[in-house]
Length: 307
Image 1 (spheres, rainbow, N blue to C red):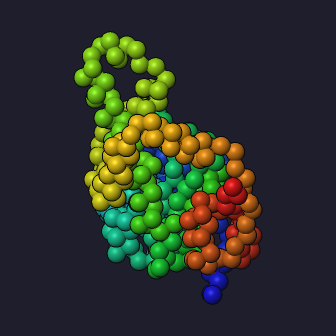
Image 2 (cartoon, rainbow, N blue to C red; image 1 turned 90 degrees about the horizontal axis):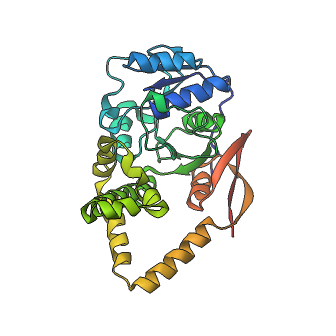
Image 3 (tube, one colour; image 1 turned 90 degrees about the vertical axis):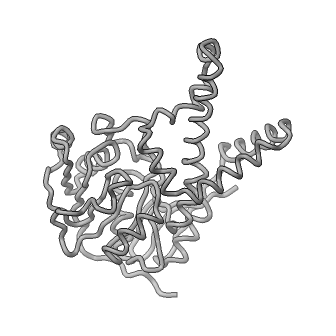
């Protein structure tokens, strides 16, 4: 099996396009880590906030270019901007297959899809937090045509801000995120709407379980709608699976759900792994539920669950 080529040049600069919560957090975190980083946003207030965090403000895109813009405008985000010919482009979008199709067709192997699994229901540059990515999982897509060297460059950006990299295909990402992100948004919205229909007394009695169950419904509705509509097939499949669970006898459902949550949230070991830089080995780490935490020459180091 062929090994991926290892880039030997110094880590390139990072250009972040879009300085809202995710983009602003990433740019500030990279600046704090000493990584050369620039940022650009159409909002002057977002540019000012990034500059105050030590980010150089520039609309020239070079090195590793991170598209931190809303899903509906990802495909056209680069229009009218100066993109260096050797730049590697990635994104932070919560859906990957449509983005891979659109930007892959335009950029070829210069594009590597990505998605950090973090953020809050807040949005905009005022919600930026340099610590946002610490300990977060960051999916970095490995398609058959992905350039290995460029994949490494994107992974290095995620590692530089304290995230753990999960190698994954775009399709696998979308199936997984439909189940653990998109469907929870739908359930939170349904729970909030049903409670509102139940009247003021019900709402006045709402406590921890209701608060936690509806937290994400505070997200920007346009963001959530884009997440759902651009991943409609996997979301429908994941929602149908939840509906089948709800149709089960309640005692069985509650018992099985409790057991599943305990198994997932309980203490589990992490078995260290070192894998060669080839696509099959990297994807095996992600599919096992593990992540990459560092790089050592022609290998990456990380872990897989040890239960």
